[in-house]
Each structure stands twice: as C-alpha cells, then as structure tokens.
Length: 366
Length: 168
Image (cartoon, rainbow over all chains, first blue to last red):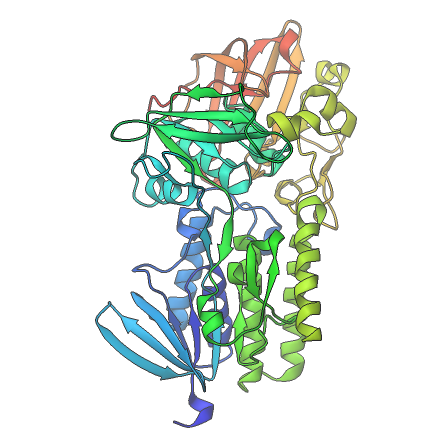
C-alpha cells in the first residue's frame, strides 16, 4: 500500500477519540475509528449533568447532548467507525491488529495511531467486597443512566471526588437514597458546588472515614464504617453501622495504557493523574512519533479536557500526514492549547496543569 | 476559610459572607437579589454568558469567582438554570415573608400551591413553605426553576426544598 494512503487509526470512540477523528477527517485524512463497544461515545452518554467550562468548551450542555453532537458530526463527515472492534495488538511498522465481533481478525497498516483508550476504575478490597451490591460508581452510573436500572435503594458512596459526588447526585435523581459519602482524607475532594447540592439534599459527608467491612447474606445489607487515623488505619471503637443495600466505589481511575505499552511508548508515573501513563509532547505525541495519546490514557482528567486533547492530536496528525499546511496547523494547535490551558486553572486545575508540565518535561528530556 | 465546605460538603453562612458574594439582610429587604454560592476557583462561566444585562462577570481567567453588579441585574433568573453547579438562587423578603427562586433537578417536580419543607445548606428542615411557581421551559435544559415562599426569618439559611426521598 502507498504510504500516503495509509489511514490514521483512532482507538476509542469516547470524547477524545471522536474529536481526534473529526479533526483528521475534516482535514481530508483517511481515518478509521475503532471501539470495542457496541455504541460510540465512551462515557459521554452516562453524563447527564451540565458541563463546566466556557461556551467554547460546551459549558452548560449536558454530557449526553455533547455525545449526540459529536456522533452526528462524525456521521456527517463519513468517518469509518468500526464498533465491536477490539484492537488487540500493534506490531512494528504500525500494523494494527483488530478483532471484530470477537470472530473476525484482521490487520491494518496505519500511518498514524491515536490511542484514546480511556481509564479503568480502581477497586477497593475489604471484607465483603465481593457481595452483590458492591460496585464501582461508574457501574452504578451506567446502570441508572444508560440501562435505567436502579441498583439499590440505600447507597453508601466511598470517595468524595467529583465522580463520587456526581454519581451520588444522579443516584438520588434516579430515586435512590444516598445514606452517606465517606472520604479517607481529612478534606472532601470534589468541587464544592457538587458537594453542596448533594449536602442540601440531606446526605451526610464523613471525612477521615473508611469502610471496614460489608455484611449481608445474599447481598449487601449493611456497611460498617470507622474513622481513620492520620495513617489511614481504622480507629478502634469508632465503628458505625449503616443500613445500605448498595456500596459504590469512587476511588479513582487508572489510565488504560496496554496498547501504548504494546506500541513501545515511554511511560512515567504521575500519581495526581492516575498512575503510570505514556509521556507525550505538547501535541500529544508519545515517544513513538507516529503514536499519539489523548484523553484519560494521557492522565485522568475530564471529558472537556479529553475533547481538546483529541482535537490537538487530530490537528497535528493531519499536518504530519500531509493533509494540513504548517501555518494552519500551528494556528489551530495554538487555539486548542489556549482552550486546554483555560481548563487547567484555579485550585483544582493548577495541580493537573503542573502534573501535565512534568509529563512534557519528561518527554523533552528523554 | 472554606472549612465546612470541605468537611461537611456545604459552606456555612460565615464562609459565604467572607467571600463577600451574599447580599446583606438590608439589600434583601429592599429588592430581590441574586445569591451566588460559588466560592472555589473552578473553570466555569455560563452564568456570565447567560446574563442578557451583562450584570454577572467572571472575565478572564474563567476560574475567577463570579461578581454581580446588582444595579444592572433585572432579576430575570436565567443564571439560575444556566449554572452547572446549581449554585445560584434569587431571594428577597417583604414584611414577614421571604421568597426564593432556586434550581431543581429531581422528579417529581413540585406543584404550584403545594406545601413543602424548606431546607438549609446542610439539608436540615427549617420551616414550611409554599410553592408559588415552577418554570421549566426548553431553554432551561431540564433544570427547573422553582419559586417558594416562607417565613422571612429564615431568608439567609434557606437554600432549597426537601426531596421526596425516592417517591417518584
């Protein structure tokens, strides 16, 4: 195959992957967007809340509406979207091995690979954690917002980051009672506006508190929580029993980096962004120059940052493949970086910005 | 400063007063006032872009806390449903009655004329109140704006109404 005609392959059709594919296709580059799920959109269709940011970041628009808009745009552009397609291997020369519908296996030679594989929710093990009724917050969110199934009536949320408090709110919107949100750290993690709307609904927040065990016969019937000392050890005598039928774990996410490892991308450990992740430059290029990493795989942030990272990589890859001239690429990349920078300010964003800077420095030094 | 916000989930009146966003009791007695309870620097400015009068300003960077120019505010209430953080209400009082317009995203929606429990920022019931109106036009994008009336003595503490737990 002529090198010029090789496509860009985008793996993962969440917010980052969709935006990368859209930018590539708009520039005229051949692009294939692969996703293992039967529906594109990644986590966007579970996000029933209004997004933050500014108008150019689609602030005030609910996540699933953003998902619909991106899908419509990708369909209008005629992007080759391959669903139920798992990418299971990457060989030298950027040969991408895909398995469709768990039955048909094939390879595609790619000019560029954009990995938008997202992140995986962390688990937390404690006695009783395998009982039915213990699930991740993302699982509960999928059940209520995608499948419209209420996982339980009385919920304990473990973890007070934005995922924990947003899902707590959405569980109440779905008709459940949230008995408490507990947090091992001495301070709550999520945005104050999120915790405030959950608190005014009567939910108690407990800092410096952990789960000791879950009890029940067929499923969760109660949770035993306790206060922790400054080394996160439960303090004897502080145990308390909560009558709950569901325990949700919102204890962070870890970038899904398997394909980046297979592609030989250099990694680093960034605890603030979720653990080990591929390093990248200012255009989201990994240490392997034809492989880009965008969205949560490149550090766990938010859908709004993921979309901008996807656009940035798509624009740069379109130039690298010869489908965009350099001044256009530079102007559009600069604009995208400005929007990204706007999202990484303030008390919460500054930490993520600093972590992202460390990734850029590591990549520059390697 | 934001002690109860980061330990109990909601800001105390003292924390809000310190940020200087809340109207005084005197202002609330003169005229209804937009009350913004957004005390953390998060990247967000739909309140600013929703305001047809240019009375709400965030500016640049978008992590600035919003500031309200009460002389420009026409009390249209568009910012109430525009705020993704559900952090804006409009409150006022006249004689021994106070009124609040607040955002609401639970079903069932309250009904005009219904008697409800008014709650404070920590979810504690303060007093009884009456629903005066429920507005949920398409532009609100599914965030209803509810108006309720309650005894004026609770005007500073009231933030919303109690949920009908799980009874859809």
